[in-house]
Image 1 (cartoon, rainbow, N blue to C red):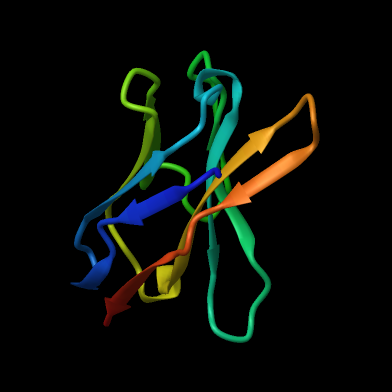
Image 2: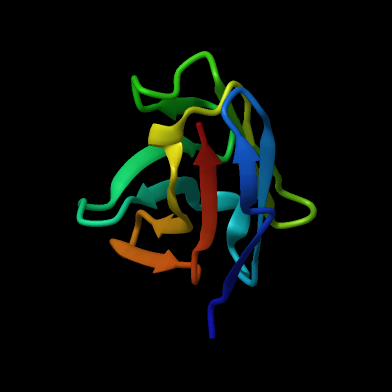
Amino acid sequence: QVQLVESGGGLVQAGGSLTLSCVASLNNFVTNVMGWYRQAPGMQRELVATILSGGRTNYADSVKGRFTISRDNAEKSIYLQMNSLKPEDTAVYYCNAFEAPFGRHYWGQGTQVTVSS
Protein backbone atom coordinates (compact mmCIF):
# COMPACT_ATOMS: atom_id res chain seq x y z
CA GLN A 1 0.00 0.00 0.00
CA VAL A 2 1.40 3.35 -1.06
CA GLN A 3 1.53 6.02 1.61
CA LEU A 4 2.58 9.64 1.39
CA VAL A 5 2.97 11.36 4.75
CA GLU A 6 3.29 15.13 4.91
CA SER A 7 4.54 17.22 7.80
CA GLY A 8 5.66 20.75 8.51
CA GLY A 9 2.49 22.78 8.12
CA GLY A 10 1.39 25.37 10.62
CA LEU A 11 0.56 29.00 11.30
CA VAL A 12 2.98 31.70 10.22
CA GLN A 13 2.85 35.46 9.75
CA ALA A 14 3.02 37.02 6.32
CA GLY A 15 6.61 37.25 5.17
CA GLY A 16 7.60 34.19 7.15
CA SER A 17 8.84 30.79 6.05
CA LEU A 18 7.85 27.16 6.40
CA THR A 19 9.27 23.90 5.09
CA LEU A 20 6.99 21.01 4.21
CA SER A 21 8.22 17.43 4.05
CA CYS A 22 6.74 14.31 2.48
CA VAL A 23 7.95 10.74 2.94
CA ALA A 24 6.74 8.20 0.40
CA SER A 25 6.48 4.44 0.76
CA LEU A 26 7.04 3.81 -2.93
CA ASN A 27 9.25 1.01 -4.20
CA ASN A 28 9.97 2.91 -7.39
CA PHE A 29 10.17 6.37 -5.84
CA VAL A 30 13.10 7.40 -7.99
CA THR A 31 11.07 7.07 -11.21
CA ASN A 32 8.04 9.00 -9.98
CA VAL A 33 7.23 12.59 -10.74
CA MET A 34 6.74 14.11 -7.30
CA GLY A 35 4.89 17.29 -6.52
CA TRP A 36 3.04 19.57 -4.17
CA TYR A 37 -0.52 20.75 -4.71
CA ARG A 38 -2.72 22.95 -2.58
CA GLN A 39 -6.40 23.55 -2.04
CA ALA A 40 -7.84 26.64 -0.43
CA PRO A 41 -11.40 26.68 0.98
CA GLY A 42 -13.97 26.81 -1.82
CA MET A 43 -11.27 26.47 -4.48
CA GLN A 44 -10.07 23.68 -6.73
CA ARG A 45 -6.85 21.87 -5.98
CA GLU A 46 -3.99 23.50 -7.86
CA LEU A 47 -0.44 22.63 -8.75
CA VAL A 48 2.27 24.31 -6.68
CA ALA A 49 5.44 22.61 -7.91
CA THR A 50 6.71 19.37 -9.40
CA ILE A 51 10.12 17.74 -9.59
CA LEU A 52 11.34 14.97 -11.88
CA SER A 53 13.68 12.21 -10.79
CA GLY A 54 16.65 14.05 -12.26
CA GLY A 55 15.79 17.23 -10.42
CA ARG A 56 14.05 19.25 -13.12
CA THR A 57 11.44 21.48 -11.49
CA ASN A 58 8.27 23.29 -12.47
CA TYR A 59 6.44 25.96 -10.46
CA ALA A 60 3.12 27.74 -10.53
CA ASP A 61 3.59 31.39 -11.47
CA SER A 62 2.17 32.45 -8.11
CA VAL A 63 5.03 30.83 -6.17
CA LYS A 64 8.01 31.29 -8.50
CA GLY A 65 10.92 32.90 -6.72
CA ARG A 66 9.43 32.20 -3.29
CA PHE A 67 9.05 28.40 -3.10
CA THR A 68 11.65 25.72 -3.76
CA ILE A 69 10.88 22.05 -4.27
CA SER A 70 13.57 19.42 -3.73
CA ARG A 71 13.82 15.66 -3.42
CA ASP A 72 16.05 13.12 -1.74
CA ASN A 73 15.72 9.85 -3.64
CA ALA A 74 17.68 7.91 -1.04
CA GLU A 75 15.25 9.02 1.68
CA LYS A 76 12.21 8.75 -0.62
CA SER A 77 11.31 12.27 0.39
CA ILE A 78 10.41 15.59 -1.12
CA TYR A 79 10.42 19.03 0.44
CA LEU A 80 8.87 22.41 -0.18
CA GLN A 81 10.73 25.42 1.18
CA MET A 82 8.28 28.31 1.31
CA ASN A 83 9.60 31.83 1.81
CA SER A 84 7.95 35.24 1.78
CA LEU A 85 4.63 33.64 2.54
CA LYS A 86 1.45 35.56 1.77
CA PRO A 87 -2.08 35.21 3.17
CA GLU A 88 -3.15 33.89 -0.24
CA ASP A 89 -0.82 30.92 0.26
CA THR A 90 -3.18 29.69 2.98
CA ALA A 91 -4.39 26.22 1.98
CA VAL A 92 -4.13 22.52 2.64
CA TYR A 93 -0.95 21.32 0.94
CA TYR A 94 -0.87 17.82 -0.55
CA CYS A 95 2.06 15.68 -1.54
CA ASN A 96 1.59 13.87 -4.85
CA ALA A 97 3.35 11.01 -6.60
CA PHE A 98 2.68 10.29 -10.26
CA GLU A 99 3.59 6.94 -11.80
CA ALA A 100 3.74 8.03 -15.41
CA PRO A 101 4.00 4.54 -16.97
CA PHE A 102 0.71 3.54 -15.32
CA GLY A 103 -1.01 6.91 -15.18
CA ARG A 104 -1.52 6.60 -11.43
CA HIS A 105 -1.60 9.39 -8.87
CA TYR A 106 -1.09 8.95 -5.14
CA TRP A 107 -1.94 11.58 -2.55
CA GLY A 108 -1.01 12.32 1.02
CA GLN A 109 -3.54 13.32 3.64
CA GLY A 110 -2.59 16.98 3.44
CA THR A 111 -1.09 19.47 5.85
CA GLN A 112 -2.61 22.85 6.71
CA VAL A 113 -0.65 26.02 6.05
CA THR A 114 -2.15 29.23 7.41
CA VAL A 115 -0.56 32.62 6.75
CA SER A 116 -1.84 35.50 8.85
CA SER A 117 -1.71 39.10 7.66
